[in-house]
Length: 506
Image (cartoon, rainbow, N blue to C red; front, side, top):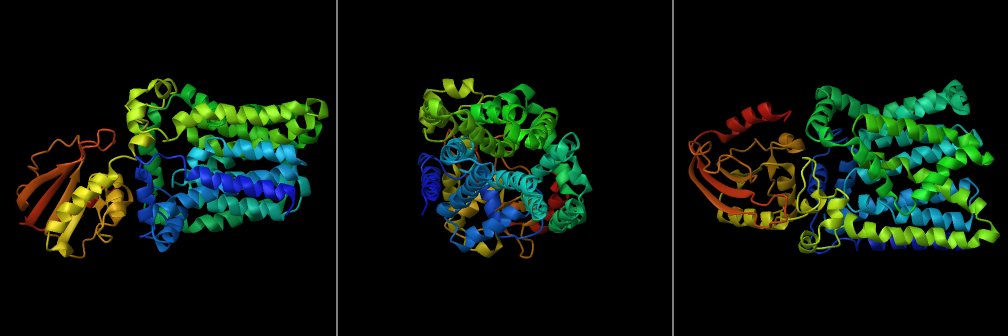
């Protein structure tokens, strides 16, 4: 084993160890993780919320036992693949040991550590962005058309993972046009590769067509309820925080395209970044949408520094790696759930200063939104289980929740593995079981519900009782109520069918 390979293996091991160590025991899984896990139980070519690729990974997680270990394993694995691609890009650019260490350190101690902490499509999204850029780098160096086909494969599967990757394409096309790489448009294999990407995307596109393109409605709803609260200046400021320790490496990469002669042929990367970044700013995108842009530039910047930090400036090599580690420490204190909710509430100053207490509703809260989304789920599942246990006719009992986080958390943490909690929210609306007559309902309602006396349900059931509430004050679900509705007087299935038709696009 060579020294380089040994160092890469050490970074991979370090990555795995850190990913399993950056969450305090007070935190549970995130609400979005529950939804993606349940998608693995209902495989399809598309979902109301995301494309299908994440569900394939979820299916593997279910086969492996559906434990927290495996839920955390796959985003960490995607992060490691991203690290390896950056490593290979550095080698392709002629980088040696220092450039490799600098690049690997920059990737490991960055926002990717936080992205890879959660089981969401974001980890794979960044991986596919990086893979596509790496394939482009190889094509520029070799003119071998096989790399165009790898670009097509990365684009196709990236699309099946998250539609966000199309912003990379929208930035790359004009970047080709304004640089010497415009000759790529004359290469027929570019269009064959695009056709390959389209073939990979096609099953999801057909699914979208058959379901009246829910992605369009989803984007409109996202823009109306969340992106409208995004401040463009905050978006820009967040970019500096994502790679706070290695921002100098990224800036050096941008500079190198214009002053370092061997890198001038790679200017298409700079213009691609500029066009895609500008598009994100214009559309008021969330800050993390742009993270996939950066890993490839860590490769360029690391090699450039290696070239200019000569033997006389060898101390700068050590200093650059040390700076990354030092500047990552304050980020570690706020960007990761390593402090308990009590500690955050008692010392909120740094979180507030960085805008981390502001949620998607545009208001400040006591915990960062992601942290609050990792609280109260086990408590909810225990309260629902207590009610479910008392009902003898479980076959005709439905657990109906107000949102996908509640339904997914109950399904994950409940001791009844076939409890099948659902909601009229997100993809669960397609999974509501109507093949059996529903006689009893365990109803989970948000704290802001305006019908706490259940007047709507009183004519439908012979017995209604409030059985509990989430008492964890740090949970986003604090105050969520659990009701038990027994012995239906009317057809609940018919009511649910009508509600499904009414709520499908909500």
